Length: 114
Image (cartoon, rainbow, N blue to C red; front, side):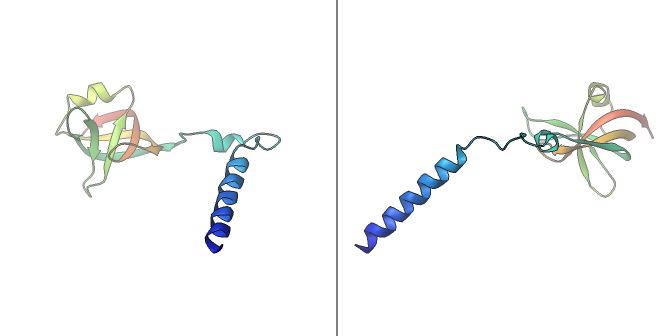
């Protein structure tokens, strides 16, 4: 009898969770800030060395700072930066909240070689 009560209680809890998860959204919807998946922060200036990280076919272009902080690079300038592998550059970029495959992401706005 004890097992029957536990089993019944467990099934009732699972059913309750299923019903609650299927409930319609609250009136007024979800606040807009919780819907945003990727938030762009203010621009930052970072100096580091351009390198390719990861393994083929999943490589990413990255900026590695003197203190070994790694940032994945994104944006229109990435193709230009591929030619500068091994060079030290200073980038002005936006730090993206969305994390990349290997490190934090930077959307490159501009850069200069050092």
